[in-house]
Length: 402
Image (cartoon, rainbow, N blue to C red; front, top):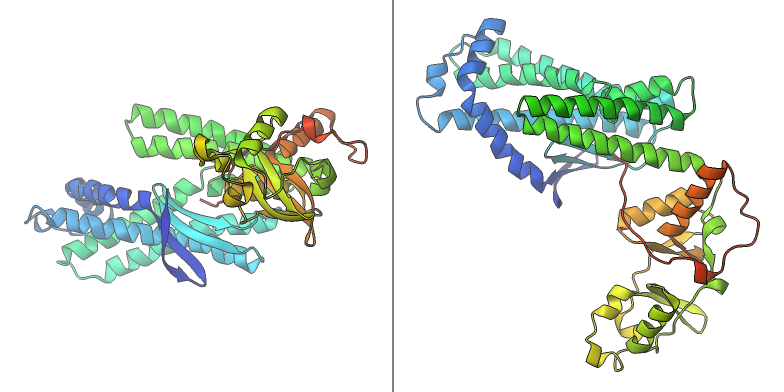
């Protein structure tokens, strides 16, 4: 869902996902509705001396206290992600943003560390920060005078919840913090891709058990976390496996060279374009004028023109001039990540500023399949003709740190 920026910490943008605005009132309600039982636990375990009746003198008061506690909890989550982020920045990995959403927080790293020591330190920083936040909340709780019932409730609640958050995140359910620590330890003695696959398998197993427990306990949030862990573990394992398989493979190795491409001119009518798409079974064409790349036109662009007007409109009227390009020397896996990031199925390949070819998601996935089936591939041989190659596809995932 859409997110919006609310500020920054240490130069890192802090964003709120729209799902956060949905879950915050829910958390406030749940905390407010459980004030009585929670007060009993805090009084019994921490000698809190909180008067539950004082927090329920008005119908709205428990929910106000619940809202303050929920906001404090998400502040703790933000600090948790900031712990990851600052250590990552120390190792030279830029952080795109920290986003608060339905299941807590996510720090978006521009690149995942493959050095096991770096990953270990980045992963463990979050739980350490959560423990420190819990300790700080407890110390404030201790110095808060008895009688400040709402304040003591919020601080005691946050002390317990932040420590619980640290413990939960240490479960070896990749890609949670504990799972990343597990991968770091596995990567000490085996290849990074293999360590990722093993950690992801363990993470998916934990996700299944977590989901089953959530079903038995009728806990929707736990079921959602289990689903997120399972999908994220599968996606990252696939991404790392692909990167390992494509080591040393560049975009130039798998692209369709410009000389083999079907292209159109800006003056081509939309009717002629659609007829070519039907005959040649392509859904996108680079647009060249005097040998220079000026745009890209796709089937979706042509569909915007009504059938009775297709002879009057030309490619230059509907083509996209906001061109997404990739250098021919870039890694093949980087090209796929760029397509996934922008939600597109193809990239124009350039050598400096010269147009030299086109690479599609199908190109990348076909090459990956060959590499995985054969164990190696020689890219120096003859390439298939453009007629045999698809020129469209889309979708994918980002590197994110829960």
